[in-house]
Image (cartoon, rainbow, N blue to C red; front, side, top):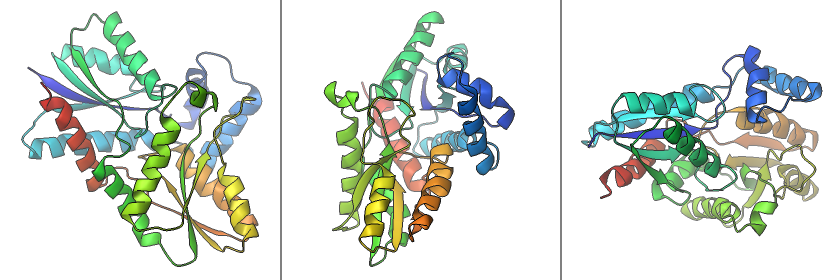
Length: 299
């Protein structure tokens, strides 16, 4: 049986000229207000004009393919984006043309939510049906507590630990209504943070949600800003943010953390540092390889 691995990510434009088209895709075709377009452009300009997400995802796919080959599993690793190029449908068409019979799909987000990862599942299944593909899709639902993922995050955080330096783990926020629906996301995000803290022997640490959406409905908290306010009021001087809900550099890291949170902290007398993103770290790629092998070797 001819098998392959498919990595899935959110997607982001690589040119500032594509921001409008990208925003329309994210909003499902609903035109974005002018002020929202202007704000997104301002944020992208602040990080150099484009997102590195596509490049980082490509590097992860290439590194994973090499790692699997070293493990005696010479399979092709594809990658696709939900909201930008290469689009899921385009990559699924290529998978079909390549005669792949079984695909292990891994969303590059460790914690599962129907409101996020579930959308990738829907998009892949839709493409599979429209293209008349027969290939079996083996889904990796979650890997939030995989030992090698925890080790990868711990490796990035360990060099930044110091006495009296606060540690704040973060993950992307989602609407509060997911809790009422029994969604495991909040539980899994906090579990990842707790596992990294235990791996490093941390007795004191906090968890917050970042990048809340600009809608009227309530979003998961506490917010990063509220924790930074608390630290300043308690007389803290140094903070380390460890984003354990993300695995690659993109806007929510390079702007939300490096620009917005850093500035917010500075205004309150706090020095803020951030852990390096996992990107193609050998330990993270080893985690992906272990996850992929489990799917490839499944009966």
